[in-house]
Image (cartoon, rainbow, N blue to C red):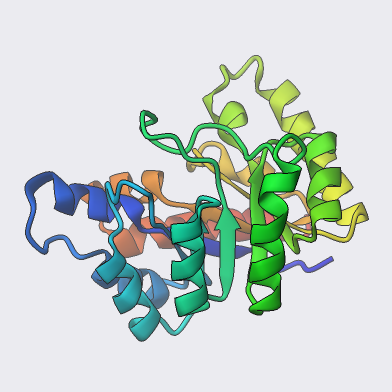
Length: 245
């Protein structure tokens, strides 16, 4: 197992702030460049059906600008598949998407939606994209992800991060066992959603997890200490958790 833990920085909510007023600022592509300079190993951007934050132009400019991999989050729809095939990003992470939600709520039901998802994953695999599935830390979903042909699963850490401290150990155990299962199934294991300075170290310490994707918290912290410093602090906590004791 790889000891180096990668950090993917999600820039969606830089675009949320921009779109609240309109215009060009703050620019999520500029944020991506700062994240690169601060040591991000990749950039994550979710092009939603309703374009509430990241836009098509943002994706075009990210593809032209980035020197680190782009993790393109997308719903399994014909429109998003066409966009992914046109750009051929390093990775395509399939996520559930509902218009009424504030952000992605819960993981993708790979087991329940197997037949609908399968042609999307097959097409992306044939195009050379690295397919990731954003799922709950659940054995049934991990087994379905393996059968459907994904290379990567990203374990949803929201329930762990949102739980009261007294209940957090139970949620953490779900993630720990799921990470082991994903590794045993030959899947690369990532984690993300809701991670903060207070919650990241336990997840970062899991040896099967090779990448964390973090966005909203970092953008919020950037208001107070700047994006570069927010990322550097997160990177430091991740490295501390991963270092041999």
